[in-house]
Length: 147
Image (tube, rainbow, N blue to C red; front, side, top):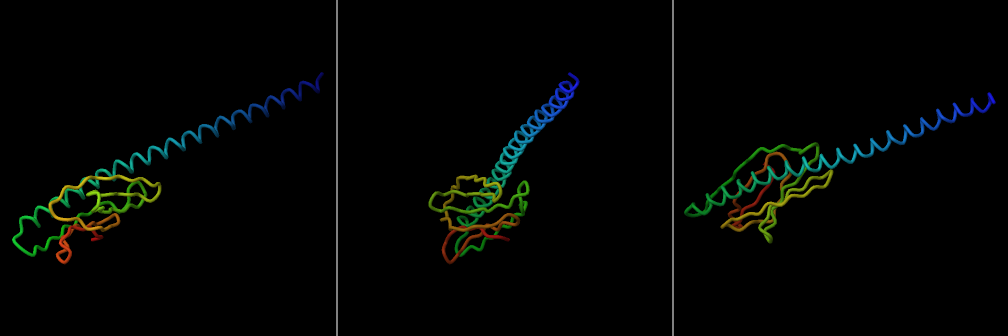
């Protein structure tokens, strides 16, 4: 009978370790998904704020162009964070949809902001950091670029 007791203790210890390992693994996986989902939400929130600010800059430049008599030269530089929650991002104008799109690289999160302008928009893109909104006189449109 003593042999059975030793096996029972060893088996019980091994099963306890296996169950504990499974529980810890489950917690790590669940926690990892929670952190990833939270990071995506933080990136989305930051991109929405930056998008609203760029849209405001575009509207400001548009008002200046409309108010100018002829051949306006307008450039507006605005410094934004180069990265959002550790991820790079791009700001793009889609003239067909009258939208501003902001996309992060890793994880991939996309945010769109509607634009209302009296001046035409140009298909252009800028990375994070200093973003310049300007009036392209030769093509009579508003664009963005890195500053």
